[in-house]
Image 1 (tube, rainbow, N blue to C red):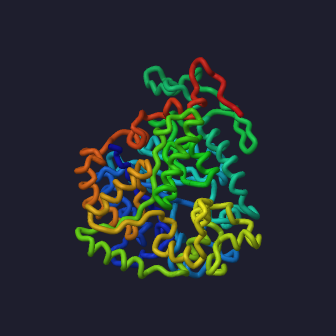
Image 2: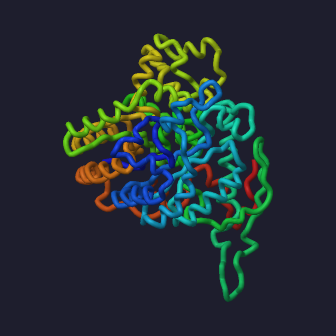
Image 3: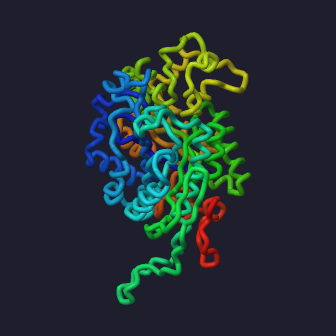
Amino acid sequence: MKQIHLGVFEVAGTQVGGTRSWYHERSDSVRNTDLDMWIGMAKILDEAGFDFLFFADGYGYPSKNGDLPEMAARGGINFGGIDPSLLIPTLARETKRLGFVVTSPTGIDHPLQTARRFATLDHLTGGRIGWNIVTGGSGNTVAELFGHTEMMKHDDRYGQADEYVDLALTFWEGCWEDDARVADKELEVFADRSKLHRIEFSGSHFRSSGYFTVPPSPQRTPVLFQAGTSARGREFASRNAEAVFVQYTTGPQTAANVADIRARATAQGRDPQSIVTMVGLSVTVAPTSAEAHRLRAEFDAMQNDEVVSVLYAGNTGIDLLALDPSRDLTQLRDSGSSSLVGQIAQSNIDRFLPTDGTPAPTVREILDDLKGKGTRGLQLVGDPIEVADALEAIMDETDLDGFLIEPLFGTADCEDFATLVVPELRRRGRMPASPATGTLRAQVTGGGAHLAADHPGRRFVVTPAAVTAASV
């Protein structure tokens, strides 16, 4: 029986998932700048046996007609956040085993900066850090904030990202031998110079020559996460990712995407079952089904077309309210009116352009589908038995490995799931009786602290017999 891995998807902002509920009495998400709020959530997850707390992050914001929509500011829709990476050392100190995953893009800074930051976080958390690799988001807003005229095209960004990850792996794996750090006070030797190897990397996008100054951390390389169900995203995941977030559409389609990722991993020489696949999931659970449905109805009443439109525009560059509601998304491609279509959040476009012969939903139907859902994929409402039954059925149908809980009401939802659903999953043998411990990689993959032997990143590992660092 496959065990269920659990994470929680959050942003260090007013609202997760592009919906609006921060002003509900149950929600504490508007306290996103309050460190104690995050400590409280992390402790709940730590004790309940969740694998990690995941922070989405980015510099951008929703945009319509090149500017910030009034609803984005008023409603706090993907707007008003802080840097979550700065929370992590404190949260790690306040917890015992919970891992932390933070998003960092591949198109803004140099890989050296990312490598140094994550190596530091891995040290400070005792090996409980993961990197969610993204190639971009929020349309041109990020490009403009950083002084560029427009963002790089979708598939081109993945090509750059492959090289970005390769260089980061070269820093983590290719400079210090395992025992290069001596730190012997009596011998007055900090590092063995003969076991430090110069990095020489020259690629199409990035170059580097020199030494990585951060000693090897407990995991060396953070656990590599990636989200994206586009064909190019799945290829990237099969090459680099150890955990993949899949966009849930239908059971059969999700199963097909999982199977495709595993098949691509096999083609890369990797164990297909070594990649942990998860989907986002919003759960409204209460002791009784009636109470759960009442809470969900209160949440749904806070949503409207304007909220959906702002969210989707920020996520894909498409303003749904500017389109003909009776037609599907092909109207925008047919008109050639937006160069952004397909350049960001490809999976959130493809999900509404089916390729199996079924009719594509109209814009009106898309608005209705996303209302109350936002970027979340799967929605469950019920009592603990109903929720656990649904989770098991989804796992069995799709070959997924777990779920990324996307709270509607912040900490309250996390506590409800921890106290009501987790005990039921343990009773069924879907979660261990005692939470797993160790590094994040050990908890998520079931392997050791370092990259698996068949991970492509292992080619960058430096050994005494291979003193020349990898280059491309």
